[in-house]
Image (cartoon, rainbow, N blue to C red; front, top):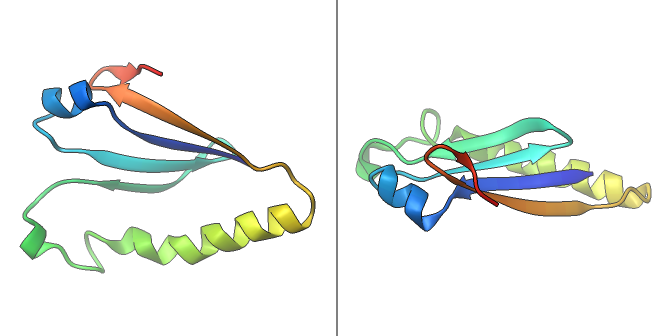
Length: 86
């Protein structure tokens, strides 16, 4: 199982008015994406934070992969406003 975490660099955050995002890609498919936006006091679980419903599924997939002996590889991609930097 190959996991890629993706988010902005410090420079990318500055270029994007400190609006960050976080993405998890599993075996080439984006499975979780969340970004800053709106006012935090207006966030709702069903609309803005619905990604949390995917967490247990992702944990179960990782557990099953480990149980079957699949290698677990995690990398972190940092991006600026224009794309991957590392």
